[in-house]
Length: 260
Ligand code: ADP
Ligand code: MG
Image (cartoon, rainbow, N blue to C red; front, side):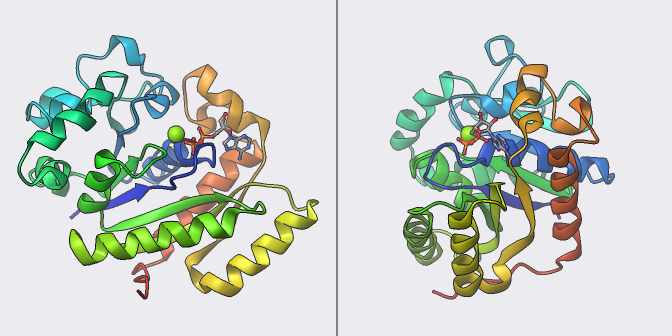
């Protein structure tokens, strides 16, 4: 049965989409069957996969609101190694439309139930807020992967996110686990980043991935090339870091549950 991982952090610009796209590609490179779901109306994971968000036949709107069959909504990234459910500004309307439905937080979970077994990993790129789309992701997911930048206010934001996850565990998904906390855009020469990193390890222990994603311009350039970084520059430190993350994830057998 495919494992469903939501990539979430209510803060924008922390590397959620970069992680979703490059982790999907790296897992696919290890011959896993991977589905990437773009739940952010900005459609950055869609564009980063080389799919034109203005020229897609369907998005997660059709899946969540219109209940179109999965096969009619799914497409492939340009390199053809993983499957994608796209997003664009149409998805903004889904947020509002979902409110009309009974069991509105269950829509994604229900839509994925029939096809889950076809994949080893289903990666969900969440929007930078705790809206109904993110709640759908967290309801469908087995675990949450939290990318974060080691900055001054990062730990405060992380505590707020952990509280939210505890609430969701209590209300909609008792099985939701923390997959891991990922340090992104890391600069080891920055003393504050090292301090925050140490605090993070003290507080969250082995939930913090050993793999660190360095700041790497290739990661920022790859979306304009329309592909995950491993197809843009496979020898870059960014490509190697995301392959290492996939390896670490595959070695970790059971995600650790967040003690609430
Ligand atoms: P989010 O989805 O959390 O808003 P993104 O993944 O879109 O964050 O990243 C925000 C910006 O930072 C993007 O322009 C992206 O290309 C860039 N970026 C992300 N990770 C890195 C990295 N490790 N090194 C350099 N730039 C990065
Ligand atoms: Mg994003």
